[in-house]
Image 1 (cartoon, rainbow, N blue to C red):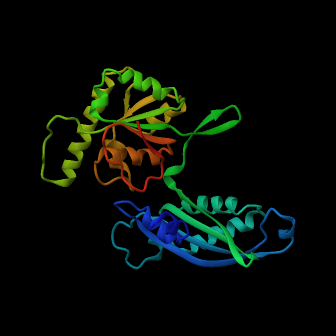
Image 2 (cartoon, rainbow, N blue to C red):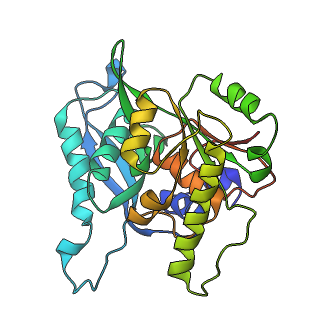
Length: 300
């Protein structure tokens, strides 16, 4: 679809277009109309108007047989209940605020991974006025104490190819990236060395992840700022302190219920960037970047 067609498409089409190589299951609520008092203008106060909701939720696949048990899936009622609860909580001026709160409530459901919400006012004129948002469970950023309370931390994720790791000006490149003033997570790919070939996908995946981690330690030897970390706790700790780390991916990837299935290094870097709600993913080298990124991608 063209960008214009996609902009005016139903949230179901937008979800499908940005699903990537491994799309999730989806449930949808179409043309759900409720009446509510909402709006920033005086003429919108004191009476209700019709709102139309279209919602698509990407959900975590159910493990094991469903056995036709409604308790094993995300019920459609949870979507309509989220809408009703937020409309009942307080009078709002903005559809944007309502959409954010409904999305947050839906993403609190254990099965919900990403949500697309379109809300339209139907009684303003001979047209529909609305907003549309997409929010992901992976977009909840790290929080740290700031001058005005807690503030979100949006790191910079940087993928280094092998040529950059071995480049004489590696430290200068890291200096330039650190000058952006953001905590930084460095990722690497497979080393140029030969590695075992098992002929068995699950074990080959582990071999490849371990090879990436070997390359992370190679980077660590090149610059003292490149501290290798493996757990979310270590990453969060470093992000709160504005530090630079190198990601060893095995633990996070293998422990993730909804994580990446392959071992493409740039795909892993992009997944980490989305998980950490990164400001951007910076890519070094002539590597392909997967389509459908929810994080801005730029080439070094």
